[in-house]
Image (cartoon, rainbow, N blue to C red):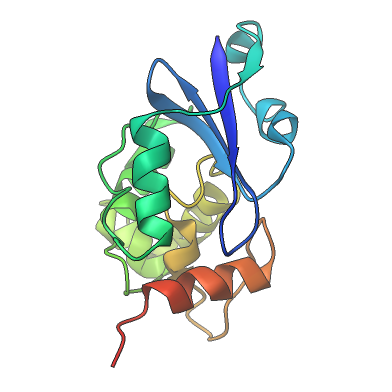
Amino acid sequence: MIEAQVLPTPAGPLSVLARDGVLVAAGFTADPVEMFTRLSPSLRTEGLDVVDDLAEITRRTMAYFTGDLTAIDTLPVSQPGTPKRQALHKALREVPPGTTVTYADLAERAGLPRTAARAAGSACAQNLIAPFVPCHRVLPGSGGYGGYYYGTPVKEWLLTHESPKI
């Protein structure tokens, strides 16, 4: 069974979906079904149960939103993808809070040539577990914020939340 919880956050409602304590989807929506429908058909056959508390996932997620920026870094995640996409998602998880990289930088960190920036962009666009796989930390080399599945205001909020306070 896939368990889901909707958490209130300063960036908006966050639907978090887990299977046996492992995050399989998360996104800034008040409707966990929206995230559930993005899962693989094999996971969707397990069904969805909305719960009040996902224990450690809930605790650490709320800690992140109240200032412990590394609280979510080691929560286990699982999402489908080719070996290249898995390498890109792993590299994303290694980008520390408060820093950003370009798509070309991300490709290089994943052991791919810098010219694989388009593949890095695709991996971000297909990421099912935001902000735990922090695609919001990737910016276009040409400047600006670029796209974000949940909208630029959410991406801006996350980057501001993570930015070093002076």
